[in-house]
Length: 443
Image 1 (cartoon, rainbow, N blue to C red):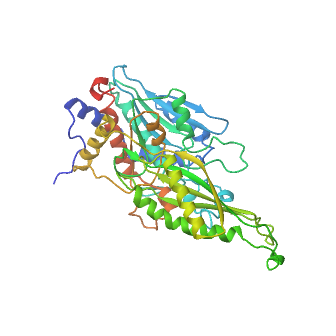
Image 2 (tube, one colour):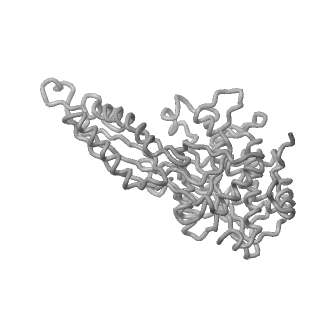
Image 3 (cartoon, rainbow, N blue to C red):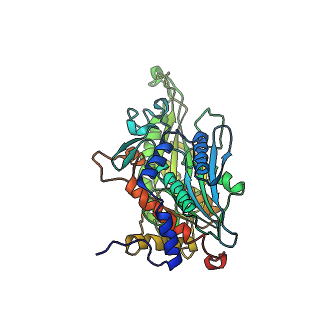
């Protein structure tokens, strides 16, 4: 059976236009772009050097581009291919920051016993694979967005609407580390700033992992749970009131971990299965093992279905804490919701959903395969919450490799063959959007 050419469903002119842009997509250029991105460190809150690198790459390709600083260390990058003004604008978007920093003094031991080569901002090529910090997520996806822009530009296609490419700081679900002096770090801060400063579009496609077209995803709420105890001395444990907040916090954490399973069951629907974890424990003073702390704090990340508001989640979590109090008589437990980013969904009838899905089906030669049970959040929530219909599509996690793939290695490995496929999808979705009139796409 003949392999699909990826152009099914297009009229003759758009078939020619997409094919013309595809001719400029090469494995060598994708590899070059990705290695360039990996080799510039971009921890959350420190993306400016990479944003400047991307701007320079776009300008060198003849594309109008700019770096958009948030402060002295954070910045976005964006570029624009202008249409004639009669069509809709589409944004191809990718975040810039890596989940770990690439610095051993910051990443070890919480991310592992040592900093492996794949956890460093230094790209190495092994056949079709590129390995290095963030090579898979997010930098492999950012390289595909860059390649798509270059290819459309070099093809010289007549556009009706603008094609924007944007790369945002602070895309990871993290806050500023303690003592950093800045709070506007992570949680989509770059994407929010981008939109506030007028870099806007009628539709958006975010490139993030998963070879499927997703029109919805989870949000997240963070809860700080405080377990109270008695500050006392080990030498007086047998003589004074004793209530170890750390020991009690362990019991609370175990019960929360059990509760998360039921929470997921209750909120699974559509393509999401929201999860929860106890992510951090803070209690006691490491240099003073002779005393117990008065409190021990737990940090909880609870994912939110697009159909669950932060307040509904807060009340449900509060009921769980109340149940734990009843199960542990005498234990004093309080909590606060300290962060909330709602989950979002785009109308499946929206043009961008239909166009991206048609591209997937044409490339695969079969009906679109929906991947369910998702619990990952991205800046798509920022885009959708501002009213921009948005879909997410990306590469699958690398699996067919001669080494073990754990979570970090999956983030830090990209297959150039999958990058080519994603880039072609982005190009087809873009061309079939920014070559139409606004009335054709409903804007």
